[in-house]
Length: 374
Ligand SMILES: *Cc1c(COP(=O)(O)O)cnc(C)c1O
Image (cartoon, rainbow, N blue to C red; front, side):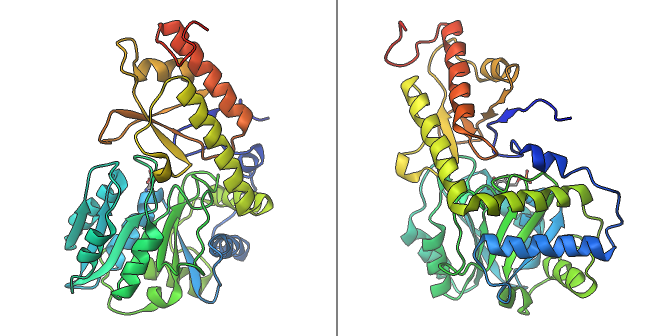
């Protein structure tokens, strides 16, 4: 029996399909069995397919843990001794990468601008050009603000100077096409529970095999050791440490649903949901943090209404009681709250959300849009 369906407008863990939820219930199995190794191999191969990669050139390395585990595995494993990493920091996830580096005492140069400001490529290039930079870390879709960072442009700069590029594609992979044949990223980080629409508990790094195998790295973590995690699975067909078994079955189902819908189909559905949300909010009188051309089309940072009766917490509770979850802001340059359409959501869900949002505004006596008397 399925529990009641909820509409999650937080940026993951997302609303999942009934079939992904059902995939969690499986016969108990020891993850050291060949059958389970085959499942993990199938997932890894499919993840490479998501980025249109060739399995001779790219591999996917999975970790038990939320997305931050895979971020930490990259930061802790990749830079060699005496090397510096460059981080493009225009949101909380860029900041998180810097903080991880600081904990491991990895020298880091941060291109730090306000959350919501767009990176200036010539300034980024000047930092990439410094001799001792070995890796450039950048967030694809900055979930803090909804900004789509120019990762392909930054990658081209990194390649020009012989730096490796690490992309945090946590909240974009599956929702926005990423094609390693067009831009051969060295490392792409993501997790099961955002645009891939699986359950939380597994994160992964899709790695260019040549970069992963290259020497000159430094081992700093026992558990979050990217090359060792790959070698461990590759040589034994077993995950080195206990994986979240049921979550893996759900991810396999989510990947099957991704390929059935197709990247184009999923992107189109997300785009449609986003456009409905954007137009609906605008009609209700809301403004947005970013100009339209910088929007990811996956998450919208909405400016809080400048009205004494508007309260995010009240709005949250009103909507939550009706089955909708909205998300607070996170340090953007203006006071915002966030709405994300990633997940198994459809236009009728967004229309229904907008209807309830309007009801809240009416009930609170907050003017909403052009037809205030309506
Ligand atoms: C969600 C997210 C993460 C990871 O968050 P977890 O809570 O550890 O899963 C990292 N980067 C970005 C851009 C994200 O959206």
